[in-house]
Image 1 (cartoon, rainbow over the protein chains, first blue to last red):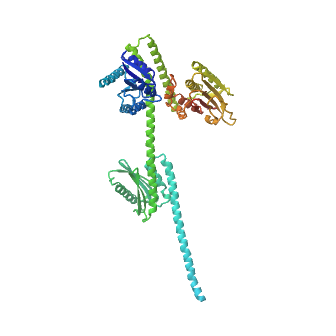
Image 2 (cartoon, each protein chain N blue to C red; image 1 turned 180 degrees about the vertical axis):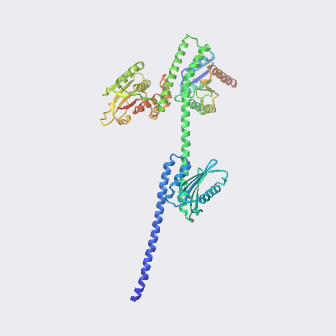
Image 3 (cartoon, rainbow over the protein chains, first blue to last red; image 1 turned 60 degrees about the vertical axis):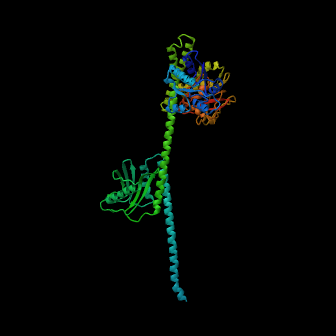
Length: 127
Length: 461
């Protein structure tokens, strides 16, 4: 079972996403900010991170920066999902190594699930 | 012998007198020079001062040149002083006549200026239309008609030639280097001042634009999030992944309800805030009993406080029977203070609401409070006799660098998300500040991390 870590201060998003994912195919864990996210990344070793940008303590951009600079953190594909839609923000985040950017309110749960399956599928092929 | 002495005496006398006269002449020249120098200095100072004041809010080169040309006569003699500035495809010529002259004089001066501008910029201005503005003494049919003395000062702003400043007289051989130097100096200073100001204006505009963009994207983000949450819940129900009547269904409906309430609260707060910012928030003052209003709000929050085993105390000190204030708006401030205190105070904590009168001549002292971080008279900033309401708690407290940011719109939003489950719009304190200020009062906070906070507002009586 593939493991997905959702780092988002919104309590509802991980719940709705979990309900939308095909049953039995994925295991989902939730971290409410970047700091908790970093800890879970090390201990839980997810196959994919779904990262929000505006969060308390350590925000999404700072999380990506840590991931980029660190040598001991596992290299995991990061799909950014946020309600921020500025072109600059999107290009900044993509430049920091994110595999995709989802503007939450522009996408249905169904299309987010497809994005997840696409990223995880590509990643499996590489290995 | 005597005769010789007598004969030489007049010669000696003449000599002495001559020497004295020469000495006096030198002294006179010195004085004249000094006077001239000091006049120049005074002029320089006065014109620089005036320019400093006016350039402060003018970027219009022409307006600045007008100031120079209008005040030049204080130290220099001329028939006419003029400026020629380049404005896109036009030239603007401004001439001020101190003395009357013939039209031919004007034409010759204009030609000389155009030639100078052309030579300085290595450009031809033949195709440019020249707009003329002439003021001062009148043109005469008969008067002097040729330019005797003439000097030009190039006007360079930000490394670009923008025009020339010209001083002319019908008499020849008038202007010395000193006169030109001073004008060079002044135009140089003006040019620097304009460049500096242009830079400031540009960077300020950039800053304002950046803040505005950030603010808008923040509002958009905060409105999108709950609405998107609701839509995704509906999507789940529509897709059949969550079945109506199931346990999850109830959970999702309550999530949607929370998101809706939060969106509504945010929209209301945004509306209040934009009214406050536009100065259109109407404070409708009426005589009312502040003690009763506070009691009413405390009663309202008792349920929420009890759920966290928090005790709310009320400590009124010699309050007037009735005070002039907007009851609805002040209730909004109290709601914000009390709900925040409950939110950021742990189980079993205490929230205390104190109300007293302080400030003015018979200043009344601030009640002693050893249990809380309490504001001093200085913190309250009361100049006149004012009602002071302080909501204190022994909660988590606020870091000193965060304290002033709390009252700015949208700075607090992240912090409130941390306050466990419940969210605030982050606009409440900014609105409270606006409401208090609309009453002529002051709104603030004192805090110590780990010990607690006091949020307060004052209303002048």
